Image 1 (cartoon, one colour):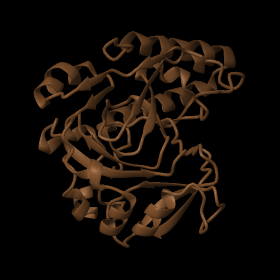
Image 2: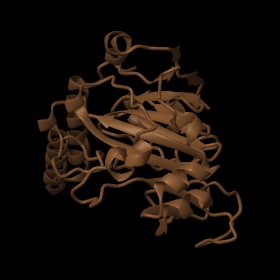
Image 3: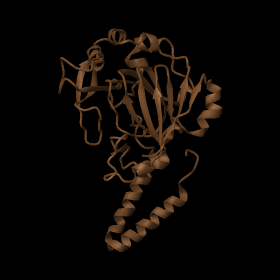
Amino acid sequence: MAKRIPVPQLEGVTREEFLQRIYPQRKPVVLKGIDLGTCTTKWTVDYISQVGGAKEVKIHVSAVPQMDFISKNFVYRTLPFDKFIHRAAENKHTEFFISEDEKYYLRSLGEDPRKDIADIRKQFPLLEEDIKIPEFFEKEQFFSSVFRISSPGLQLWTHYDVMDNFLIQVTGKKRVVLFSPRDAQYLYLSGTKSEVLNLDNPDLNKYPLFFKARRFECVLEAGDVLFIPALWFHNVISEEFGVGVNVFWKHLSSECYDKTDTYGNKDPTAASRAIQILDRALKTLEVLPEEYRDFYARRMVLRIQDKAFSSNYE
C-alpha cells in the first residue's frame, strides 16, 4: 500500500494565522487547543439525550460496519433523538431493527430537507449554547452546521464535498483518511463517492490503480478540529461512540453553487454544466467506428489535461 502521510497538527491557531498562513494552502490540517466551549465535557450520552429531547430524527441503520452509499447497504429508520443516542452508544442492542450488532449514523437535517439546511442553532437550540464554532470565515460564507453521531466501529464511505468544512470532534475518537483531489483518477468514483470501501485491505485485482493514491491520515480526539478543504476526499471511522459537528462554508461566491442544494454536496453549477457538455460530446462520437471514437476521446483527454492539473493542492 501507499505510504501513509500524517495530517499536520497545529496547536492554538488563531483566526488570523488560519486565514493568512493555513487556509491559502488548501490542505487538511488538525487544529488543536481551539476554544469550543463546554460541549467537550458536557456532551455525555445522558446529557445530550436529555437536552436533545424526543424529537424524531431520521437515521441510517446498517448491519455491517462499512456503510456503502453506492450499493445502499443500509436502511433509513426514524427514532426519537434521545432513544437514538442511547442505542448508538451501545455495542450490542436489546432493541434493534436488523440485528443486535447493527450500527447507527445520524446526519442531522433541516426541518424540511428539500428546502432547509441543517443548522444546529435551529434544530437543537439548547445544545447550540454549549458549542463555540470557530469563526475562521465570514458570517455570510456560512452554509450549514451538521450533527454527526456514529456508533462505535462505524465507517463512512469515501466522498468529497464541494464546500470547505471543519469537522469538530466533540466527544469520542475518529480516524480520518483523506485523499487529494489530484488523486481522483485512482479512487474509482461513482459520482462524488469512491467504490473502494476497505481502505486498509483493498481488492487490488478489482481496483488496481488504488495503490497510487496518496493516503493522508489523522486521529481526532475530543476537542480537535479537522479542516477539510473542498474537493478533498475523506473516509471516517468512529473508533468510539462519538459526537461531531460539521460546519460548512462557501469558499466560492454564492452564485457558483446550486441554489436548490440543501445538503451542500452538489457540484458547482459551472462544473455540472461542463460535465453535461462532455457527456453530450462523447455521445456525439458514437456515430463513428470504434477506432475513431477511441482516437478522438483520447484527444479530448489531452486537451483537458492541458487545462488542468494545477499543483496548488498537492
